[in-house]
Every structure is written in C-alpha cells, then in structure tokens.
Length: 382
Image (cartoon, rainbow, N blue to C red; front, side, top):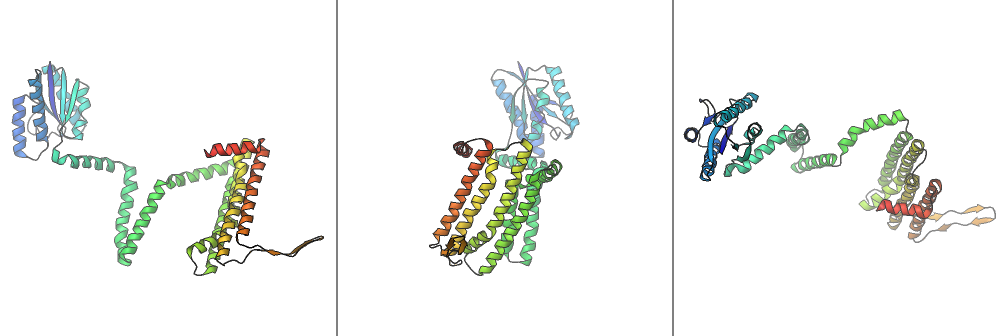
C-alpha cells in the first residue's frame, strides 16, 4: 500500500526555477534547504517539513510512502489545472492507493478537492506557525468581511463618516459636544438597523402602492391619524410652554393632558380604517378588530385622568367643578369634586365602561358571548 504525501503550493513560489512536481524525499529535503536559506521566515518551509515528518511517521508504521510537492505557476485557474495534471501524472507513474495533503494556508486548502477527485484523501494536515495562529485567523476573517459588500456598506461607511465628522465637530465645538454627537448618531444608526427600520422603509412604498391600487380605506384613515397626531403634539407643546419653568414630570403630565384627546382621535381613526378594511375584504371581521376603537378611547380616558390628577396635585389645575344645569323640573346647583382622586376615579370608571362596551359590541357582532370574548382575550395574552 502506497500513500502519497503531497504539499500544495498554488502560487508556485516553492519550486521557482524548477519543473513541478518535486518528487521523492531527497528532492524535497533539498528544496527545504534552498527555500529556508532564501527566506527563513517563509511559512512554506514549515509546510515542507511537515510533509517530510508525515512521510517518516507513516514509513515507521510500515507503510510505503511517496512525498511530493505540487505547484502552480501563478494564482489563477491555470495553476489549478496544472496541479490537476501533476496529480494525474503521479497516479500514472506511481499508482498510489491514497493521499495525505499538507497545506499551510486557506488558499492552498481550496485545492484539496482537486486531489480528492482523482485519489482517495485520507487526511488533510494544515500547518499553522504557533506565533502566527491568531494573526492568520484574523487576516482571513478580515478578508471575508471585506469581501461582503453588504457588511462593508453597513459597517465601514458609517465608521468612515463618523471618523471624518469627529475632527470637524471638534474644530467648531468642544470635544465633549463632538464626542456626544458622534456617539448619539452611532446609537441611532444601531437602533435603525437593529429594529429593522431600514427594511420597513424599503417596503413602505410598495405597501402604499398596493393600498392605493386596492382602494383600502385604512390608507385614508392613516393619513388622518398622522394629521391628528401632529395636532396633538403641537397642542401638547403649547400646553407645556404655558407652564414656564416647572419640573420635567409636571411638563410631561401637561403635555399628555393636552395631547391625549388628539392622539386618541388618531388611534380611533386608524383602528376604524383597519376595521372597515377587514369588513370589506373578508365580509366579516374578527372580534379583536372590533375592540380596537373602544380600546383606544378607553386608554385615552385613563391616561388623561392620570395626567389631570398629577397636575391637580401640583396645583396647576384647580379642583374639577361640575357646572350647574337645569333639566325640566330638575335643577343642579353644581359641585366641586374633591379630593383630586375623585376626578381620577371618574376617568378610570369611564375607561372601564368603554372597554366593557367594546367587549359587548364585539360579542354581539361576532355572534359569541361575553364569556367567550374574555376567554379569547386570555388565550391571545398567553
């Protein structure tokens, strides 16, 4: 049984000036000396020595071995074909039964299938110099990274822009402001990619086009909802500006109190449009969509109640007073709701009643009972 121990050199640096392959132990040992004297730091010297060691160990185990060096002429497809011809020549001349391939790089290891397609390969021995193991691994990882166009655009381009912007900002502002601005932009970019905002924005034009062609009602209601949301933000900003210098919690409560009616209207418009689309598309609607408008109103009432409660505790709002009115023989002189928790309780009660009305409404139109609606709600939560 003859085992062929081959050392592969795709670029052909090892056998420069000779006609490959180099066959036989004496010829390979002479080649090791020549290459080592020429460039002692060349890792291919270790590859040749490893081939000689493997051949010696197999011979000591009683096997007949043949050590050879296969080499190309350059780093092209022609080099691969030259190595294939050399393998075929060794098989014709020496008729080996199997092979052990020794390589010292990932580039040379890519040629193992060429040998394997013509001869049984029992093992592949990759030689890595101990001092250079981490460096070589890092090199190939960087090479694969730079070969990926998507990764280059995602990582290298933002990094380059940040490195250019940093000294510019440093020159016009303080170092702290420059550092904070760069870190904030990098954080926003990571959130932008991590939350998939880029994928959503890429698909948004197609969704809008499909909605226009299909005549979806939700498209119109979404536009209305966006407009109401902008009005709500503007109303909240005006409410905050009226307070002047107050604590951040009070300002947030004032913003919520002024903006919530508009934001609730926006949610109501969007959910109603989605409900109508479901009704038109499926000639029926799931109870979850029937609950959406009621849920939006209920949440709006509760949030407005809590914001008003906090503002009343901070003496921003006066206690809530019910105005006097007359309804036929009934005359009401008006009343002031004290303490502040009374107003909050009324808003929470109103929110609960609206939510229950939504459940009852969904049960009526979907042909189920209220108990079944609550059961479906629990199953959805689980």
